[in-house]
Length: 391
Ligand SMILES: Cc1cc2nc3c(=O)[nH]c(=O)nc-3n(C[C@H](O)[C@H](O)[C@H](O)COP(=O)(O)OP(=O)(O)OC[C@H]3O[C@@H](n4cnc5c(N)ncnc54)[C@H](O)[C@@H]3O)c2cc1C
Image (tube, rainbow, N blue to C red; front, side, top):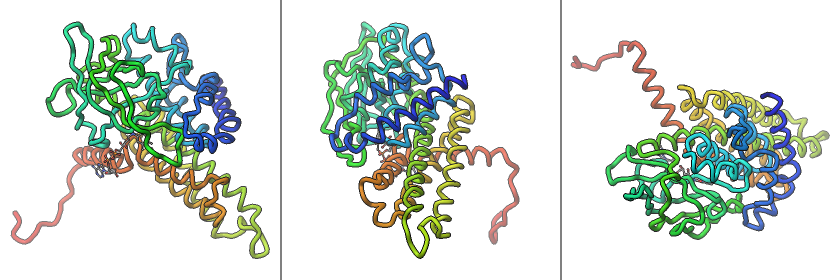
């Protein structure tokens, strides 16, 4: 397996150097998903990372496959994010889809001929996903009819299928949630105006409207009762993937700063001779090493009892470190750091976006906080001082 992951990582590195880095500014200027680029990524095997060989995938473990986004993130974090979501959806289809659905879709997804994305968020609720208005009615013939609206759908109108989380009753809570695959051509499916996102303008994002969209039973990916639980599992993988992409972003920022500072003459030497600059960049380097160790440990823990907590630690720590890295490296270049060709301003905005998507930093803190409360419950209590008159 180690030979396979080495080959895939080398391919991802090449894709970053030959396609993403030289083209990303043009993609942003054009404001269009670069399908030719994702087709090239697909040809390198980057679109079926965790799916089995027999369905056309690479059969990599999550622990290995997630490292791909570190390579892609050196070029662009939003592109790495979109491919990571496609890979998670493909994994869900191959692992949980019905035989009929897999027969129709799995090979198209693993080969990247078709792209997939995930639709959970709604306009009224991102962090609190249990407040959901999208509803599926289960018809007598087993088909499902879905009505509602999703928000912040990545690859909106570009992906060929959307794994959509819906409720199947009006009861509060998540016990009636399910995940159903809705193909782009489904009658009644449409998309709202694109959100304007200048720093990753090539990633189409918009609302997705579902007006009595009917799909067959075979499209159920996660049955009633498993929708939110499955979505949260997917989100754990997404959180670690984002942390991986952030490490690539930090490395790109650091290399830009080093390449500039070693040439920028000042005070009889160069910028990189100054202790203050070396300390700033040294902190970035330390945080990059720590981030890498953390996301890799989290990736290896996915699917184990520690998986969710480590994913939360990674999502809590690494995007924050990436924001600091991008801003510090901008500072090292002085005014030049703000100019477009160096790309640091783009990296700052991307790192901020990566703090929000797939569960904000604060939501990761909530997950970590709950784990701490559980841990506290298992510890002996220490005596605490009593107030005057307290019994
Ligand atoms: C670029 C991008 C792409 C996306 N792609 C997709 C996609 O493809 N599919 C999809 O389903 N969704 C997608 N999302 C949505 C994303 O997952 C949500 O934006 C995210 O979950 C946060 O939700 P929100 O934006 O509604 O913020 P809100 O939930 O409104 O949160 C607002 C603020 O409150 C804070 N907060 C919330 N709860 C707590 C708490 N308990 N304690 C302290 N603070 C709290 C948050 O951290 C945040 O700072 C995307 C978002 C972005 C930015």
